[in-house]
Image (cartoon, rainbow, N blue to C red; front, side):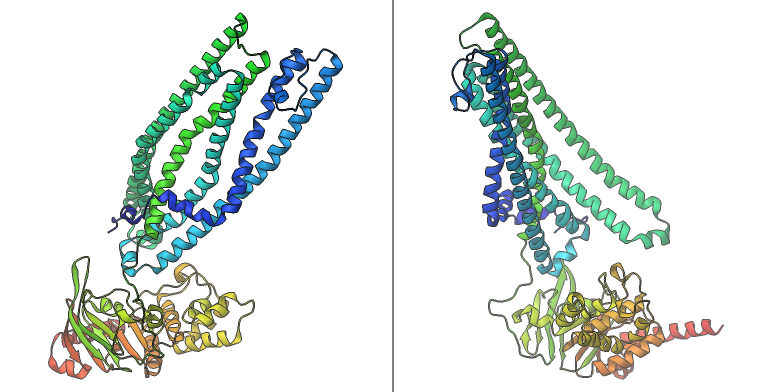
Length: 636
């Protein structure tokens, strides 16, 4: 169970193995370009080590005229013989310039290749991971979406996956930088002076151990920071989505306090982590400063006193050029440790979601009927949300083509009962059957293609009116969304469905007709208009079973009557379930089922239930009295 803020703390339990190994598995398909990028990156780092050697050779052999051959001579790039004439020194300088130019050329080419190959690989991993995570989220069962908030899911799909891409893009190259730079510089310094090399390299294991300790310090803080960010995102998403309610009740101060509290929590945890980071980096700088001073003193003393193995002037300068480069990547180890921990926390959330299995699954050999007649049966169905009973021993037989109205007070279990039909949830006990087959035996796609649901608050996608209606049929949707020109047959099907739902008239009055953009969640349309589009979308699917969950609650009486007339024709050959707050909507149903506290308390026709003088009759009488009172007020 997720926390109330949708923080997704629990999903870490679903991670199989180390999350960072799972991340690297996504890079495996691109191993060729990844290998080429790694090799190019090593070449870049090694090429960066050449210019200081060139400088050392120039000081010793060109400027001072020393006979010390140096590493470049040992490598065969320079002559080893002593240089005595000005012409020979100038020729040697030209040779050194050539070596430096080649080094910079290699560095430039390999730098481009390594960055392009590694960064493009990171982008591909990001794309694949986001696609897989989104697809997996879409296939999770509805109980997952009931327990988790949108802000937390958006944080995973955006912030967490983007952080993993940045880690692969930046920190992977930093790892190569550390290995190549420290290894290369360490080897070169050892060749010049083993004693000074030991001093220069002494901090390396210390920094490694300190970084390990740093991970221990920082891990709980960054884990908490990630969860705090998710809670803050959820709070912001809720408040921005509920702007109209906040304005209506003038709750600006209250919401500001709630956001400020979440923001302060994030601030406090971030500052605490920053304090540890700054202390760590300050310690690293102090350590490297001590080494710099030791090399300066011991190496300088050896040169002044002429001690055996003393460095030449050029080699001494080379040591300090390399020391600066040696500790730069080593100091970056601490930052990489930060990035690693952040990435690990994000990977736990991403792969925790990917490791979550749907609770609604198909059998190994699912049932795929050639057609569905529409017989529906509920056999002693019991269902609970988080151990809170919602349905209790409900039994109901509905023949194909029948229209069933469901009535009862809010919270009686009407909507939940019908959510079991397309397997948004499974009953805890009992069975739901379509055409005599348990819905748990069906192929999910085959089952849901025969059941259309129109909810009380229908969801419209940001797009055109036609696209939202076309969502009911895959072929029509493909033609509307992907065709360069509007497909005539597809548009005709959309118009027919809209006409049947009494939506065509208002659509043609819109600025762009069927091509009018509805805005986010259909915000540019009224509630009644959104519901009529949702009805048209459901009808386009041509289902065998159709569910109307308060589908006419937001339309005026005149529009409701028009929709009712159309629905009577449209559901004539379909099994229909109609949940209605207005009992007048279901008075002509073949059967009316009355529910209370998760149980079926009455069933029969409108006339029969009125004659029984039970709960339905009381509801009917109360609504008649309310309608009469409203009519009196209107006349006055």
